[in-house]
Image 1 (tube, rainbow, N blue to C red):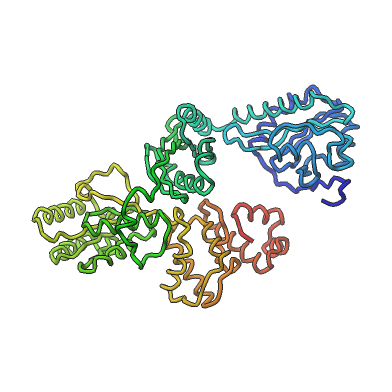
Image 2 (spheres, rainbow, N blue to C red):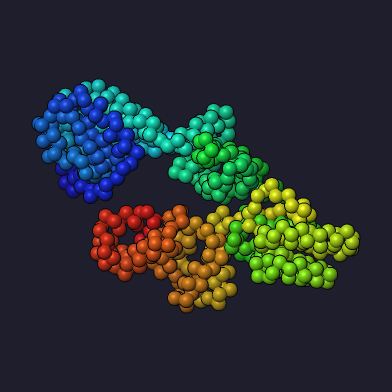
Length: 543
């Protein structure tokens, strides 16, 4: 902080912005400062980082004194910069407070009294900034804090008034759900996530993160959805999702959460079924899924296997079938074979009493699905003493699909996306590297932790491609974080455009070349220092 007796407010070269706080301030500030023009008191607005956005009211003497301590637009008055003060300390404690004269940490600030009140977002509760009232210490009185609190409330009201129609609709639905239900409730919109106190009390941080991730997966649904999900703690939760609308537009969704019986008590599968040794992963959610498929295979229950592309549906089928070696398995991919060939080969394999897996069954048109249903119906009507096991795989589909083909499959299992069982990444990495022939290559714990922070929208298939890329560049030894591909050193959860991905990769490569020196990297890449700092934050680049 420098000399303890001197304020060291840092000037921040802040890019032009138009935040919800600044938009609200343009409407509210003139009325608030109307009565203090040329008076020895100044109304100061900062953002959530303590950077002064505006300074109004006050007389010339006060402004001169404020300039001497850098309490002016552009300077950051966080507590870490200048110690105890009405702005930074209000941000730290999250409530209004008055800091009088000698209560300030820095000597030159002791000639002032500052009353700061946080301005919170009426929907998310996040702190947007601070409304601060500053005057000379000898002029301090209790009205300073009252006025600052009132000013912050006016700003908050204006922010609510300026909130989008979608945010207001979601907030209204959230408040209604919280009033009607004593259960944990989460609301999710495009820009807003809200969580009530019951959710925070009943679920620890890892469980909360798992619930939020699962909620985002169903957040765009326009119909009510209820799903079960296993949590890191071993608890199973039922998530009941209801969409919220503003007119005909989807505003987001409200999710009510109910704890179920712990997952390990739901089934005897963990006792009665072994996990195929060829499958990597030991997390409760993954093990529960695999064992459900194994049990269906042993009982010859026809099964639909849902799941996103790349989650490992085919691998689960093949591994489960290894536990019943007396039967053969024919795997037909509807995306590689023509629809007619699928039917022809399926008929041939069923005649030979082979078990059958048809991959990507959702790509078959209605006529061929009907023909496949007829084929399977004929098989079922024959009453064969040795009926085959039949499995269909497809991407997540409409749960209301009741086509004749699906009615023949009484069981359905969803293979979870990789982002729902990230604990399995170390096992998966080792297994995939061995499959690639990279037996002399390992990933450092920090590199594995970094991989576990990523979204993995391409699931296990994407992870395999990343490891193949690493193996092309490094044949043996230990892979550290700084040698991971650029895409793996960016933790942003949103999908980047092609141009953004190229920009991210260029920044990562340049930072690596310059040993993390952001100033040198900015110069080399032709960016300003402020821009490269902003891009590092936006892309979540790990240095």
